[in-house]
Each structure stands twice: as structure tokens, then as C-alpha cells.
Length: 65
Image (cartoon, rainbow, N blue to C red; front, side, top):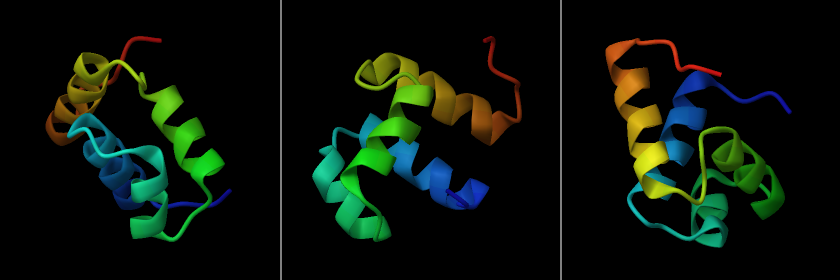
């Protein structure tokens, strides 16, 4: 799956804002499963973890593994 960093950030941001996976998938024209996998890598369904991922991406701070 080749997606840009901007698309990945948009997906994580939308999930952090509370948008459902199926909605985000429709907005970025991807399969729900792919959106779920990207969200899961960033901490989905924990919205606090997603917000930290968004903050880290905006401030260019590497996330701890």
C-alpha cells in the first residue's frame, strides 16, 4: 500500500477527531481495512494516543515504538 505522509496524517487526524473508519475510508478513497490498519499503527482506537501521534507528526518528534 503506497500512501503519502499527508494522507496518513489526514487519516490519523480524522480518526483522532472521532470520525468512524468507514467515513474516513470514503473521504480518502481507500478500503476501510486499510484505514483501520493505518489507524491501528498510530494507536486506534485510543483517541488520546491518536492525538499524541498527530501532535508528534506536526512537531516532527519521533514516536516511541
